[in-house]
Picture 1 (cartoon, rainbow, N blue to C red):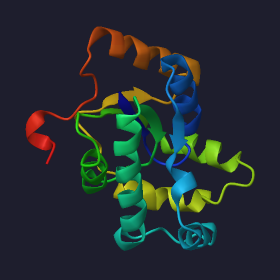
Picture 2: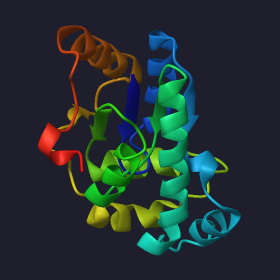
Picture 3: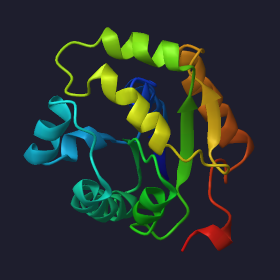
Picture 4: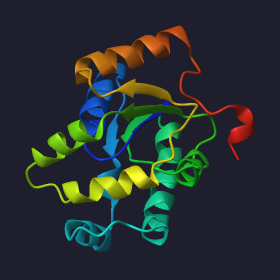
Length: 174
């Protein structure tokens, strides 16, 4: 199983993804760890990334997702803001991936981002992420007003009840 926990900065992707991976007995990866030094430098100065900036990053993640799938699965925390980004990621694997979209109010996202120490993503970049975000209709959508533990429990329950939770319909995989 390959699962991507997605959403804008501050939604809790890493926290939820790490706990979910532990519960499922899968390795966890954070897409932020795969950004180039140039991308990190750009974001640390408050400049949003462009599609061109993300191209190589997404290609690397897609390749790695295929490797992780072959090794038995993984959980990846990744913003995956646009449908084209999600399609690139999906194309790296052979079976449908499970998508979990963490969504919540702007004020809570800003509060969480403001409380971070040492993260290159500035709170003033949140609006650009929200403007870029294309909400996936197929993902398991969860509210970040719940605790990370409750969110993980909701994901585990969804997985137990429906093996295809949060996957794109077959016609949307290309």
